[in-house]
Length: 204
Image (tube, rainbow, N blue to C red; front, side, top):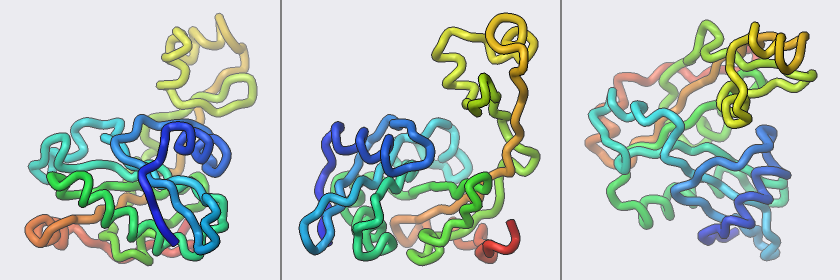
């Protein structure tokens, strides 16, 4: 198995075809994964993060942390955990100032973060315990408020019912499992006290 920097076309195709979110994030670094037969298997994508304040609790500024936002693979890779570990090693080479990676496992997708557990990430706990920012169902499709805002619509349920879809409704999520990967000894010492036992699938 080998990895190389991904082109935007590869990133876009992988995110739209191999990942449940069906959306293309803004990437700071992404890698194409090839199996031992040199078949392209998709992309692993890192972003600056949708929330610029995620690094504040660790006293990190943007550029010192990033978010793993997509593991968009088609299943032809030999081992997903190995591909992720290889991508982290390459990420550090291309971004030497990075000290921490943050990622999430989506409870709405029944994900517990098995891939993070297999690669020894630190589990920080469950976030958005009360549902976090609610999604909105419009014409039967659940959309993030950011997606609605990009259309020029208001993220107000009454306004949406009056102007867009009379059946629009809020959809509250089950939250997410948060994982962190420190990239040096100093950051690992800071993160270690935050560690909680890994969640299991039956706890969903």
